[in-house]
Image 1: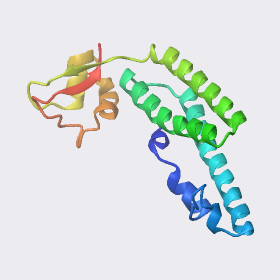
Image 2 (image 1 turned 180 degrees about the horizontal axis):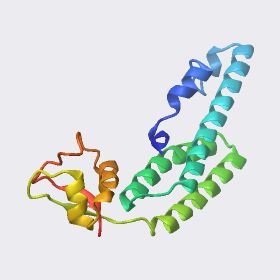
Image 3 (image 1 turned 180 degrees about the vertical axis):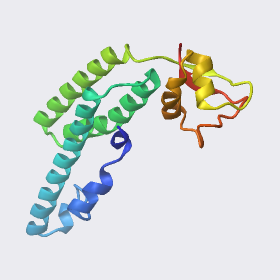
Image 4 (image 1 turned 135 degrees about the vertical axis):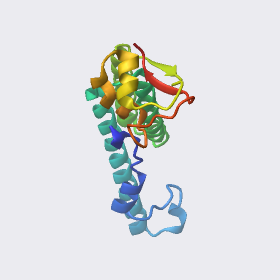
Length: 171
């Protein structure tokens, strides 16, 4: 899911080269206008494909917490909303309708499956503690230390600072 947090614009720029604005046709020759139109259409198609791929990844994702559901949903909404706006502004009705329907389907799926994701809660360790001891204290199961390591991403699993609020899965 890390790829969900990546902005595809640098990839598009690499593939398509420098982009001429949509309204710059007054200063271009007919061949340049055609080349720019094709470049813009290809850019739109590539961006839409990236947004759709992000949505498909979300549909297949196993969420580890409600916080992750919210973060991934928000990372999906910005780019797809931009593409819907672009499709509407360029009068691409098929893309506009298709992207809106896809957005709705992904959001319904995320909402339904997100309800089943574990909740997180705030916890303040009274003193520095290892993830192994913390898992044992919180869950009565030291084998869940790796789960805490994934959630907390500590610098070292043997040292979670004390007196700092952390987010852990609710028991």
